[in-house]
Length: 454
Image 1 (cartoon, rainbow, N blue to C red):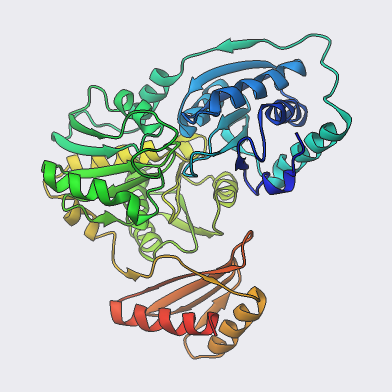
Image 2 (image 1 turned 90 degrees about the vertical axis):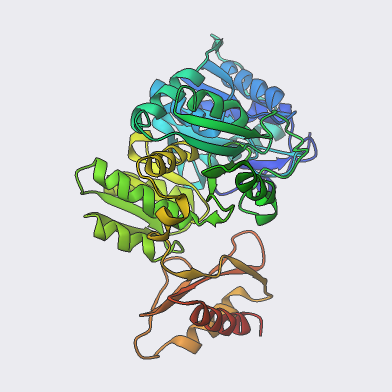
């Protein structure tokens, strides 16, 4: 096929429409290129439930085997299950998934041995260059000795490993509704939750990559509606929603109200600090709530602020030796999980925290939800730099106001802050604002939006 790899090789992964933008022949070249760039003797490959995933995954495996690399195929898995395999087996890995994207999409998330991330600066650009060259000149000559393909089951080991990190054996019985969105949570949750003191109410556990009930993207409030209704209807203690590849988890309380990912980050940070003797570094991106660094300090830890994006979080996790990291997008990273993100482990922490006391979830998380946030608001602009400069000019020099450029522009004052960052792929500016009360947040939000959209 004729493919424009600049359209599908993104900053952190491969993502595009199948077969319009990429297909199994290209997946095979990606497999050969991954083998070449990692220089590994063996790799591990897994895939989600999308109709195109098994074929793409197998083609990639054959491409790597053509280069003399032995391939362990773990078959159907969540993304964090692939990270588990990469860490436990100490092998580079490839996960075939398009996460929360619609059914016609697919992609590859790549990592080096020990689940270390592969992005543009850590191998993805080289993989693209090799694949582009082979698209023009033909596939590389196979190695003298072809690698092997071996199937291996890792689901039970993955579940047991997660349960070893969070003790749920003595919690009070809980009723939990889980919306898997027809994604990989339907595959992993029954194994991870097995034999725990939980009554599980499953929603959309049937693996179906066409997503017949709703998109598997809980970041969009429309996709949480079914779960929000079901939790109070069942008299459940909480609800949990996973995205398509089950590496992110979203939580709703007993009333069906969403719990902010920043509150979950703060809650899990407090637990991880307690587990580590009240010391340790916790990473948070710059648009998580101010509650997060406050809770980290209150529990003896050191908060470390970073740019938005999993490659930055993982790099800071490795650099600082952090015990935990969290993002506003409901990605949660753990030192004990090879610095990789796993929504399932975060969900177990929430269940353990709730089941370890008698109050409802809404009361438990109130202490971790101290401010009013705007959520992320996108504005289409013709001149990103010009609008950012206008915002800067409006706030620069004001008393008690600080500005920084870690990621876009962050403006902070004692009672509020906001961040404006440009999209890397679209003509958008993204605004996140937070304040001590609703009125202040609304005033700041509207003031900044008027500057962005002028």
